[in-house]
Length: 327
Image (cartoon, rainbow, N blue to C red; front, side, top):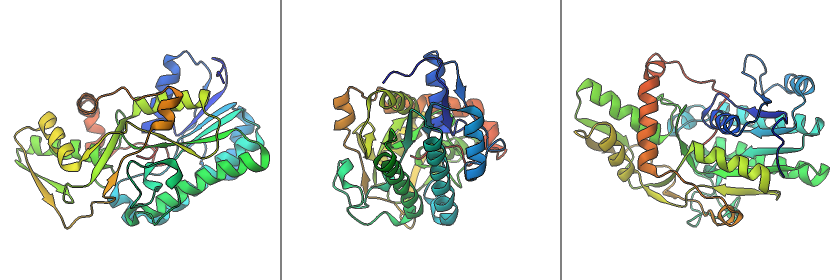
């Protein structure tokens, strides 16, 4: 399926990490009719408001990448918000897309919805085969419901709604707030803060033994557009690199880029989260897509972006909390 360059394409969550990357990608490809809306223009948790916006703007293609997201601390302290916001966001947009008869919708899940003790690398058919990771259970339940909702509308109404399952993300426009960020931007912020304060020791949550996979958000944006054109099946499809590393090694990489003189101090009293999380990306690779950004160069360019926008995070000014996507 080719998307006409003048098609009305709605990116839900355009101010967040993933949404902003998709907008950049589509603009670079020459798409001239992109539709976006800030939270003060339409609250995606309000079905009536979303229906009104869809009727007024008539989108033909929808990238549903909006959501309330965060790291271990944010998930642990705000579970009701994570569950409610995300269930409402995907429910309103999916239903409005059905009523508006959009040509295709792509919904973004998250690799954290797989069972805590899933076999590694994680294949798509392991969804709902075991208990979830307790530290992000509320968020995971909401995202699982979103995937199943897309499949239900496909089954009952014939809607062309598909779901992608990205691994941990990073890149420009990430959230570097230490109270709510994911591990990689949190590490960049911690090491930069320590460098500016002249501190040698940097505390890292957990033991450092947990293993994670990381995908640059520009690669994910490329994958989302690719899947919008080439993927037509029910159920999720994994998007990642298929390569993981221990958090200890990731922290050392960030240290070497940001503050080489720093020493790593791990706090084993803090949770590690899932012991390991790396996706099997065989299906999307077989379709013809592969990630292209090497992790070290991606981290270095993300640090450069952070330095250029650091004042915004130091002042506590962050992106719309209902405008990002999960990692």
